Length: 470
Image 1 (cartoon, rainbow, N blue to C red):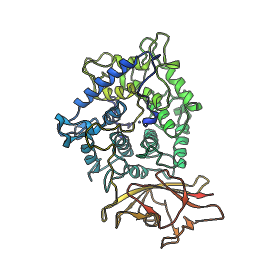
Image 2: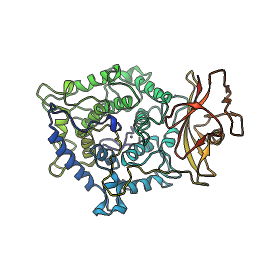
Image 3: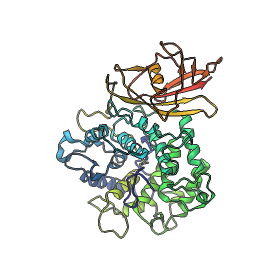
Image 4: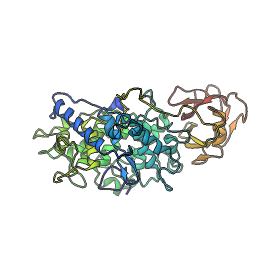
């Protein structure tokens, strides 16, 4: 079973809420005091800085600690401020961006969660995931794994975690201005599939359960429950939703009164606790009060802080361990700091360093991709990655749609567009024509929908959404 490369217990071949959803300071009434949390964050950041390689990397051959970016951002540390020996030319953000832009990254046989993990961590590092480089668009990379035969799933549906982390990445990695970059129709498709996979006990697991009574009746996993509830919340589901309430009840049923830990599938451990707390954080649910304050006066945050070595700052995986684990330290710090599964990048302290880095324009002659959705209404949503080679620093909507007829993954996103040339109003798409007030409209990076014309300017990294309707 694949899952995001973050735990030493399971291999991850698959993939966390934005700053507005992250709580960095817990109320004074919480069991762990603000001072304790502040100390935990300070020491935890120091430990994660020690994981940086001499070349400035957190990810690469033999080193896969890139989830540190989500934890650092949650704790208020900008990746661009993390440099080995103070060498700012090797700062963590620049080195990571260079890796993501490499033609051979992630591998010869990538899977959707490679791109989801990268999108979440690039966002936390202050790299616009849709504009990594002239040729790399992580949002488009994810779109390419849409399952046409099972709309709403990304990657093989049997690996349900790929769909959960698609929701986390597409909903959590927002625009630089903090807005949702993907259309509501796509978020709704993801929400529908996540709901359909919620087990009878209120939680989730890594494998697909939809349509399988046995799977739905099986015991859920603490980790995936945290990720799935976060995926719903970053997709717009409120914390009062029945599905979220059922997930809370499942987590509450696994609380260990004497320690505040969750009794997970693999026993009590930091990673599972971290994922569960990050899920609660992403939904704006305080993990130190109400349902998560035990009769013994313990909370999940208490347990995590008890797992931390101080002043070293690393977290141990099991209570019986005598040394820190990199993965556990990342999961533990992110959760204690109030983070979900990603966080908006904090303002850098390095002089002159911008909060965001992004590819500003197309590079003429350099092959690239754009993320495209086409919604004809009545459940007719198509999602794809469109490959094309720009001839200038910008392109047009007409050129994108023309390319989509033959160079879209998955195929079939666009079968035809009328008119087939010029810059005028699009009157028909995929055989569906404008009719009265119901016409084809376009939105970019979550902007309001307006009349679609072939001549509309499209810029590097734009997430393009077309919709038919009034």
